[in-house]
Length: 334
Image (cartoon, rainbow, N blue to C red; front, side, top):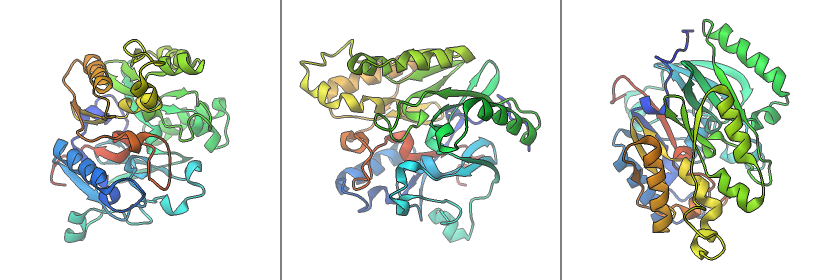
């Protein structure tokens, strides 16, 4: 396969096509159907170049669809999440279950791209593509080590060789961020921790706030891991603007504030979640705009119950990046 370089590596800012599950506004789970319908409409309004995926088993398309590496080349993996072990009916195998779009049915087509299967258990939401020091890079939560029953040194050695052997000597940089553990974060996805801004910069969620409230030190650990490889880290922070003990709405929503990092990005456009507390939503929007040095949009639907926690009955526990599969196509009608 072709060598992956900073020129052909497809990061979020290079995408132009969006897919969402057809289940997003159907009666799957206990979330209000009107809210889900509005969510669908807002996503399509934001990116008209959007299609529905049929035959999916849940709405979190980011996790089970393949990861685009370059134009026409995608990374496959085994999607077997431990957090869905008791809910096998919610686990989608996009090839086995023939996930498709309406256009493909009409044209009698399937997704046509080259797939390189990485022989590990992985979730797409645990993969953040970036560029650092003029090299392609993937950031993941190190929960991937537990899922594949491997120690970090062995995994790093295998990782380096696998990319070089399969992609003409590609040097794919790797950042593994410490997993907080099942009790704090059962899903363990990097897209709830950090996102790529560009030019060796990343945006990190408000772990400094969480560390202060829960007396942890993940913010320091994450910053160190990212800076070691060469990233400049910009952190979201809300405790500087809100009184945790006396602001009842902020305290109620605090454990959901991670969701702002889980925004949807198509090209240079960004759509961020909304938690229904206008002053908090405004501060989050301002901070993300400052990080990217551009205007961002905020979805016009209260997502508080969708992002709150992983609940199979509600089909909840994620935000906008989780709900969407974004790629780049040469032809917007593909």
